[in-house]
Image 1 (cartoon, rainbow, N blue to C red):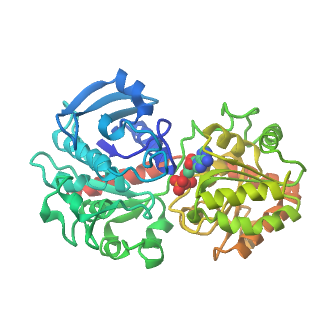
Image 2 (image 1 turned 60 degrees about the vertical axis):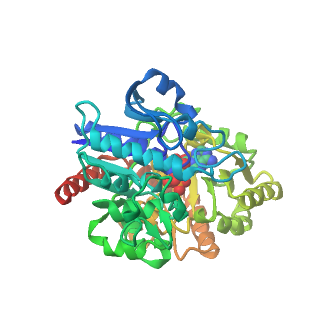
Image 3 (image 1 turned 90 degrees about the vertical axis):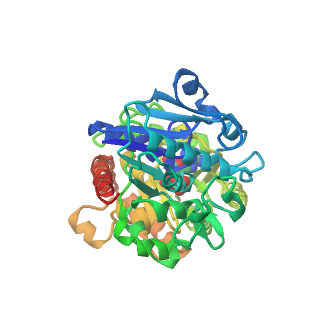
Length: 478
Ligand code: ADP
């Protein structure tokens, strides 16, 4: 099958979160099964070398304010299609925000252009390559089926994948015209959302099939608590919605070969983890010998890290330590910086984004804390499993689906891989941390749990097959 992916980020080239990891990994898993996947992403400055080395396969004389081209390039095992449009993507700041941390004012045009270019590739093909199915990811690619519906050429079926329903790409109704969208699309069944345009809603309303990144999240987003206003539409389309669990790239995240680790290790030989732990302690200025917890996360209320702040006195009292790597909400950043100075030697904080350090922490810490209020899938708990860094997680979304709580029954069955808590509040997070600290004291049992976690399957094999099933059924319903 020929599959076109359209997304706004892709690891290892451009990444702000889990979306990038997934876009960097699924195409490889599908290719291994014999399918041809092209990945269309914006040509950000970080991709300049790939654009320079690639081949121009499509041109636009004017794509929302300037000339643009699609450049095909192979890199890191991926067949990339890079939308080279400097007037839209050659920017300072992050992928979505300017240097002052505000949304780029023309984000609707930037990602409208991505969707429009994707629709052209889907409709016209590239040489002999024609997409049998298009998989658009998150709101940034949500307009693609809207543009495709306005085109005369081929109309391959579209599957929309929701990585996080909190981000919806909502813009004023006046952007309809500059985005070159037909007025007939501006209806309740189309792209209109409370008098505005929602890119996400466009994708959800106009795609043949919808997927999201875990079975639990697929159920949760049908409710007002998690659906963020899209629950009505999703309930109407529940028969077309599938939850497919994310996996991880087993080559990139491999404790046996990871170049970011002072000492590599396997499930059989965990002792070298101690050398990695010492390096983490050095980087975060931590003392003592208790269990070493970590956080590797965007620092936002979604991730529940304000709850963790309330648990720090108990964590420190139990002799545990905490290393936090993250950035985001300024108030949460500041609160962790203050905590690090209050609990010097027990709590260490590095504000920033550091891929190498995140690998080191997975390779050197004992447990990873993920107290998210909602979590579509979550990847850091999967990296935790693979690296034997026991996940302590809120029981929600993909966290509920991937971790086996060390409860009484799991003890009998010898299958626990971590700790879960619910309802999601500071008291129960504190209990979960206490349970993990107690378990850590029993070295034999802890080592057995680490070994089990490291053997838990977290690759893409099963999920890649599940995507193929959805693509096939989308073809049937196009
Ligand atoms: P989300 O996409 O909601 O941010 P996920 O758990 O799905 O959450 O994915 C987060 C990804 O970003 C993981 O690969 C994680 O290791 C990485 N990550 C998050 N924050 C940082 C950071 N400060 N430094 C390095 N990597 C980070």
